[in-house]
Length: 533
Image (cartoon, rainbow, N blue to C red; front, side):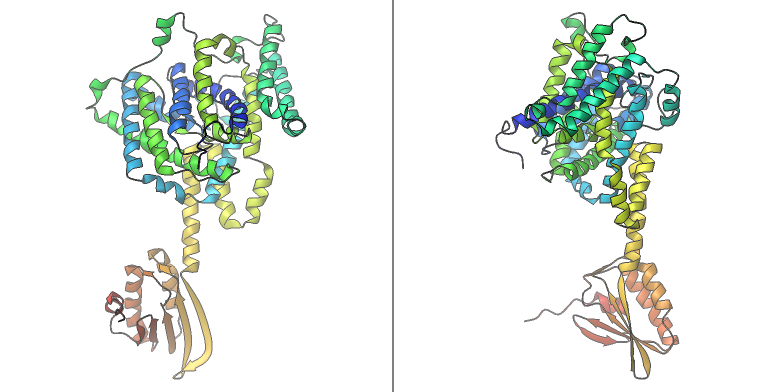
């Protein structure tokens, strides 16, 4: 639960919020660019995600904002719906649908994602962050920040972009990135453990300050300077009117357009799934292991999306990159997410010129550290030691995220996870015990069914029954079984005919007594236990 005093952890939350701000800033702008939307729309989503969703959410460490996983949907929808204002209507309606999801308590879905897939998602995102930041680190910024898909909007893929970087290395951007990375490692490994001041003043703030100073000192130098395309690009309005002009309103006249509603439902569904996945992952990363109420989260996200869409913002989800940066930087309560939202708002209004002096390569160095902490090599060894049932879904999720995108990678991991569950179910539906003693001259075999036996177990049970030898005696123990699927009862009914032909006797041991060779298994299992006086 969150502390009743929101400022109780202010000393931890303020430094963390600054780090989250520096991580969020380029991602808000980059995701907007990758989505084919105005740059300011990404900032609106970041501000609403921080302040509004942060305040309403029950998550203590989760941070919301525009999501890379929705970029392709947004890009397609803006063109298909005939303009950005029509798309904003879909965002508003999508938020309303999320409210309905929350009221219907659909958030329970979040508790059913396998742990191996969640860990694979975190690791895959960590790897993709590192791979995607390599070009930015060396000053090649053709692909916008926040484009996490394997096939990029600039026509390259993740790896071809890295090789292409070799022809476009910017000396100035590289120097300041290396210096920033050195500062971050020094801060993380040494200084933060030496004195409290180094936890209050975070390494990313110092690295960004060094980046701005370097840019100012080398401005105009063709070799060592950093050109404008390698810097953060926040829109700078000429006047108050031009600032207000950056906000857009949805076109409500299109509310009867079925395509708008299809897009709205798509946004609601994908944004809700991404949020629930992120909530599950964030709760795993939280040192205090707090549990986020998922239905409340859907209500918070829905409210945020309605407000974001009303004023010209992109769709919002809880996002793992910002959330993990928050946790890694020591954020302890939701105030860090809220404060980061205010930092975005204030800085965009008051100091956009200073923001536009921040080299993207320095922010790439910050994201390198975030990515590494999500994808530490020892995690692969740990997952391998847990056995193939954990390791295979984990690896499939990681590879899927790196070579496709977040949603497809998770879907592949979940699909493999379901197959593993089916295999486990196949193996665990029953316990077969072959006894040496005879019963009426017949070989006695005892089969004990599990507590729950569903249609998933058909194959395993059918295989065992078919393999029973002639002239045997089967004891079927269902005393511990609380749920027996009708499909299984039908298998037993069909087998009873085979059993008679093969001279196999069947004895059912249940809570209501013992029955030998029942006339009908269907009728037997339809009976309800007699009430005891």
